Image 1 (cartoon, rainbow, N blue to C red):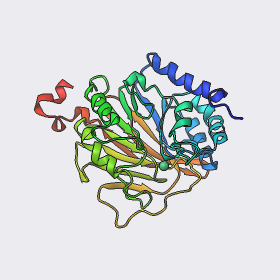
Image 2 (cartoon, rainbow, N blue to C red):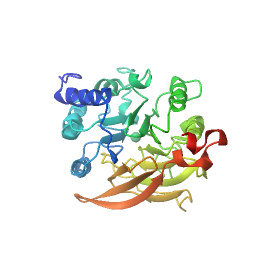
Image 3 (cartoon, protein in one colour):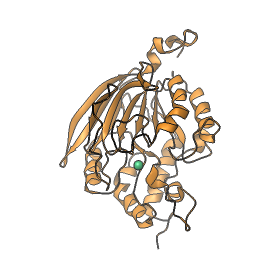
Length: 324
Ligand SMILES: [Fe+2]
């Protein structure tokens, strides 16, 4: 019989996260986070974790689809054991994907039951009533974790919380604002086409008005990086959208991208891999994507990012960059 809260990995992982975020974190000049979605527990997952483990980083961000347990509880345990060597050393900050819903007709109607029990994130600290969406600050980066599979319309709790959370962001303290969610709002892969559209329609203007720098998503088992976008058009004041659902899941890669390529899409590839965001200071960050090449990690895409907090043209004159 599997215990939901008694395993070593639960205590190690969750206690570490809560201790780290209840204390002042030492702010480094360079803040590094590794980002990976749709992790699973395959040989590709092991390769990704091995590559991440060999590098220095401060925080690991995971935009959903963790264990692929899909109601088989022992798979949550094996996933915990698989990631424990890393998750006991660094904060692992996650949000949920469709494989965390675990709705089971007749037997189980409470969604996200195991996810909420096993991966309790520090949501109350950001005044969220739900473990399914929350935010936190680390070293100049305000990170917002959203839920693709909980209500997001304008009268929903998640929408109201997001609106209030973004309104409180002080870009002097956290010049960078990044958002993670599972189902991508922008996607030129044929897999999961349009699944994030209703959430995009409901919430995109909130992120745009807050001058969010980057939106990371998973779900599509491939890598794709977009230009700065708002409402399906290139916009210098919109977020960069990055899909990074290529962690190593058991379902395989999403191999078919639509043709011809969208002019909004800068780079796309169906390979397993992981991403690294290196925040240099309040203005500059370096994003790189590393393809799993057999057991090796190969730099395949990189770009320098400039925080929108320093872009005077993206803020109303009443709130110029000098005031940020
Ligand atoms: Fe997914």
